[in-house]
Image 1 (cartoon, rainbow, N blue to C red):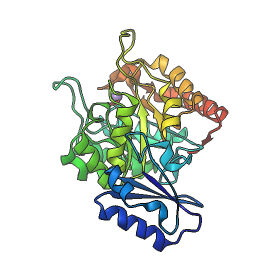
Image 2: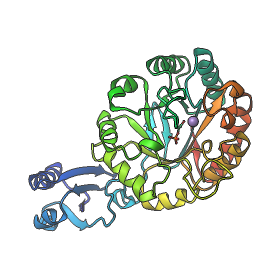
Image 3: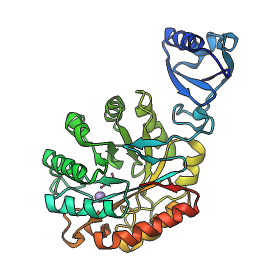
Image 4: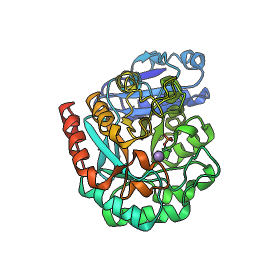
Length: 340
Ligand code: PEP
Ligand code: MN
């Protein structure tokens, strides 16, 4: 249930509604807009209804949220879009962000060289995995803490905020020391204990859509982070499994307009993992930007031929400048402000 407060409702009136919601065992989430405050009451609907909140001082009206996800629903923000801001870099609303970097952190040279180039060409954040979810347990699993240290060095030198994956709750402390945005990978999208833990860190989160997850599944997963009081969640379409075998995954570009209607959360597209080859990455990136994505997260490597992981789909650093210009041009045509 959403409780829409009157314009000019006092803090006392707002607190009173919150207290009553909590008294019946539900939780209250405040969303303060420029004019209006909206309180999301999450929990047993009948108990909230029994309070008769429509008659309280300062309450304008009540709106039932029909979707199973509440805090993520577009209705909850009444048409306002969430803008995730990290170190002055914004993604969401009118703001388009370009996140770039290697699939996995391999070495100091690889990390710093790639970071320098993407920074020079206006990437807004650096990506790179220190913990890698690999299909085979015999494949390289990431450098772990050493990888995080290299990411920190790249951040210190370039100033780029870091996006890196957390796979295991036991690594949370190490990861949040370096990460500005915690990536939750496709395979962990429904790891609810991990999502709850990440919600508690208060760090921004990039939540990737599971390989066979519906948009409802994705939004329900985001709700686990949001319910911990962490509003900084970005959703990421990265390709889903279909019957098609001509490429790794099917990039579901319709997720962009569909999610725009369903949720206020920023929508980021990963154009690298679905094609699995770099020559198709620019087309998918521009298509995503044209369709209204709020950002792109793309794999870039200083020496893709020798990359340990996902080399064939990594853009070479030498091609990144032209690529970034193209994507930004399309994002601008789609009405976005492209911030560094
Ligand atoms: C990645 O970003 O390198 C990655 C492993 O992504 P996903 O979880 O989408 O497969
Ligand atoms: Mn990858």
